[in-house]
Image (cartoon, rainbow, N blue to C red; front, side):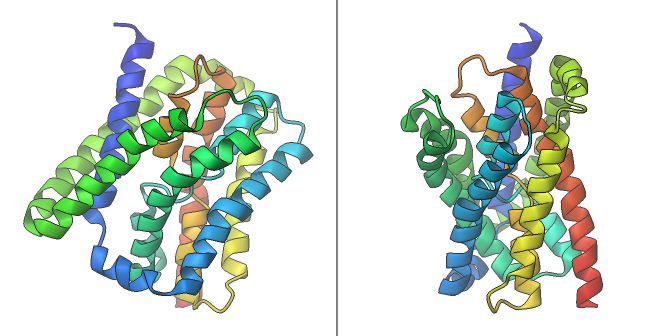
Length: 279
């Protein structure tokens, strides 16, 4: 079996494991209660699938990015809220109920919106909407729904499964990153000086700052959880879409992978600042 084939398997397990863990950890009652706040729901939609893609598109037109890097940024733009999101929410002392609602809505919304948005944003994308939606349904929505179902109907089982699933997801997240370095390490080095890293920082930090500062009446604790969700990317969903693209350019993969460490850095710095403001 080739390294590329092993990498593909690792990506599938990484994706399923992280989304299943999200479902097992989600407090559905709190999420449903928070979803009754129509203003909050409307803001999630606007930041996630209007402002996010628009900002990414603007960056690709402003910075002299090579086309594969630009496509990588656009692919990730309609996929907010990273799998490690609950961790940074706890560190920021944000509104946990609203965090649960944002986590649920963005996971489901990403599955619905990416097949609609990406063909409009990326010129020449020959992948059909169903080809994009299919891996999202099987690799993102299905494990999330299974995790939520177990949490709702068998909370004790969910509590026992969660640390195991988290550990598996963590192992394969690390394995995915290792394989990325092995397969795309040279391409990552070549990205230095290409504006790829700067574009990711500008996009993720920009989404964090704008969604926090422009709260439209939301409380500080609600604005912080909104900003942390908008400033991170659901790389598992992006990888699921990537599987539908035949023979992707290595620079496209590198651009997607760069979002992982940059998301982590931006989110934890922001969480620390939000905690200081709350105190």
